Amino acid sequence: MFAITMWCIWKRRNEKLWNGVEMRPAVSIMLARDSLHQWQLVRQKLQHTAAVTGSNSRAGTLHSSSSMI
Image (cartoon, one colour):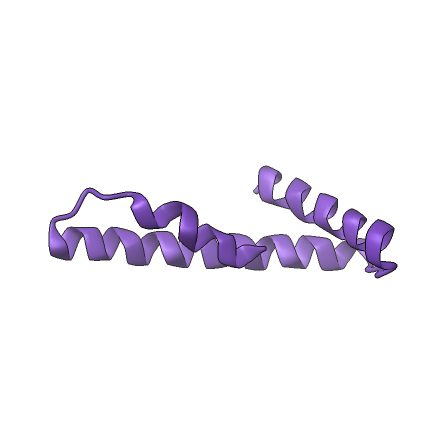
């Protein structure tokens, strides 16, 4: 949770600096929680798919996490 929170704070800081978009700190925390939840759902789906297909492939891991950006 710490890493995703720091990433969200960094991302919001860049939004303010480069685009003039300002958000309350609570919004960054909420976005971090939502991003973590989405990541957990994707991981569960990948693990379920791997279990069903018998695949050990991790190729989709990096691609699926890019949706949080």
